[in-house]
Image (cartoon, rainbow, N blue to C red):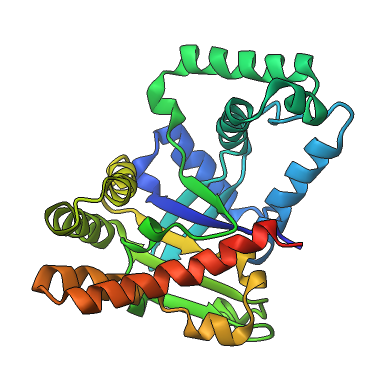
Length: 285
């Protein structure tokens, strides 16, 4: 079973990488033994579980992952590196900062926690802030409302158990959205402008701003993907079919823009209540 997590990913075209990286990713795309799309999440999760089950546990891998998620559109190869070590460092830093020291010791020995933090500090000093950019964002137990802003309801792709996926492969359930970076940035900028003018709610504005800033860090011809990941296993087929969160949020934003406040409120509440009910499962017995 995959973790109950969703992922927001950016796939950059091969031309966005350095010459050496381009050669490496091009060779990787042709490799027969690389993790395929259908099994990539399982492979990534398996690596993490093995690290955490070790004695002592290893919060971050010793080397950066050589793997990536790939997409091809016509003749263009798009690459989304896993960046497992960087993402593990960032997640561990957040976890360590939010967990009391005595409780922390029950998860990771003090010496391991300090060594992991030291390794990350050395990496930051050596590589600079630009190296902290991640192509993948993760959210457990829910999809943040701001993540739907870059997408249109027509970009939704739902596959239920046993259906045929791209290329004719049989796949388990999955729900994703994919759009171009140009569309994603334009929608984020429009939503931010409307929310600032009509709502002024600090938390909502900050969340959309964060997504918009993150998108600006990548090549303008990139692709943006929202993947429900393991969260699809918290929703039955009927709920997945009925989930039109991106379309509903877009309708709420348009309602704000056109002065249809009741429509905007109703659509926004549908999204909020749907994901609040799912997020509450984290603490369910």
